[in-house]
Amino acid sequence: MKQLRLDPISRMHGEVNIPGSKSISNRALLLATLAKGTTELTNLLDSDDIRHMLAALKQLGVQFELSEDKSRCSLQGLGGAINSNKLQELFLGNAGTAMRPLCAALTLGNGEFVLMGEPRMEERPIGDLVDSLKALGADIQYLKNPGFPPLKIKATGLSGGDVEIAGNLSSQFLTALLMVAPLAGAAVNIKVKGELVSKPYIDITLALMAQFGVKVINHDYQRFEIPSGQSYLSPGKVLVEGDASSASYFLAAGAIAGGEVKVTGVGCLSIQGDVKFADALAAMGAEIEWGDDFIIARGSQLKGIDMDMNHIPDAAMTIATAAVFAKGPTRLSNIYNWRIKETDRLSAMATELRKIGAEVEEGEDYILVNPPLTPKHAAIDTYNDHRMAMCFSLLAFAECGVTINDPDCTSKTFPDYFQRFAALAG
Ligand SMILES: O=C(O)C1=C[C@@H](OP(=O)(O)O)[C@@H](O)[C@H](O)C1
Ligand SMILES: C=C(OP(=O)(O)O)C(=O)O
Image (tube, rainbow, N blue to C red; front, side):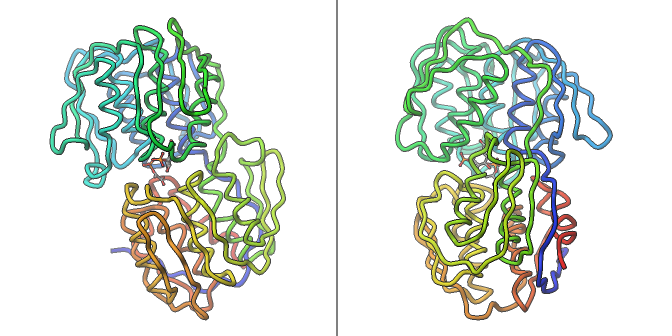
């Protein structure tokens, strides 16, 4: 296994232009496919999750051209559902933003589709989405374990009507249902059951749907009405914002070891909820400056916080490792769904923080981090989870440095993360 030793870094300073948002890239690619007209996407992310979406679309016959650096894509929309006259077996890695939305989208047309993924994808639930799609007439079978991929879809189109969707495990189920609803046979009324987690991701979905010309009436995230007779129309150009979750590591670096670190490509005009990470850092005492499309973090002594992190589950992981450099304990709550992501992130985070000497309490849906007096060097296991690798890079600001096992797992969303991180050091 490859290991990356990060020697102690005493100061971070400079500017980094953050690669495109994973969440926006994969939504925009799918909506561009369903839309009428050609869409020119710029600042598209080039990472595993997007490669899986693009490979699936290509296999399904969608025509697109990528620039050499893969950041620009010109995609010819189908002007409606995806059809296939032969069985299509699609491999989607561990990309939730490909698996869940494609599962819904492929029920819209005609054809047979198998959706499969990495072993971890087979442990990530999809049953709540499948139940809702079945209630709208979809034929979906589980090929291994009920409630989990791999799946087989026999598509003949979706009817409309009233449908419920569980909100308590993943917002991606609601996102997937919303994106297909305009192309169902009749108006769709969605009722969200239970607490809706990761709510700001629904705003990304609604913003993209609006950009592609579709109307959704949002009744306070509890009910959504999607009128019938709508279709997606390409807006022509889509600029993908920088990824706010990816920005979190650099902002935390600035807060812990700035100097100042400026991230560009995301700012206060962003449609991504994860920009609120900067507010959490500010609550820890960091000095934050906002621009329309940039955020600056300057170094200061951080203090521990006690915060509900349900709205920013991905960036919240960065707070867990930044907490090592804060005075006093940090408690991050309402994050049960860390357990069903790339790995069980509550367990992984607790295990690895203990290795560097933190005292950690792992609850069913919270984590409490007591920073060590002096962090110890450790080889951090990353569990094939890009965010574990990126979060623990912050331990380079401890006098002992850190070793990251399997650093290349950042390829899920940020293939050249460690080069970009090193470029700001010193
Ligand atoms: O819709 C999206 O783009 C995402 C939603 C979130 O997942 P959950 O809704 O499962 O929390 C987030 O963790 C994931 O990285 C991306
Ligand atoms: C949870 C994540 O990914 P996914 O889109 O596969 O759910 C993530 O990127 O942190």
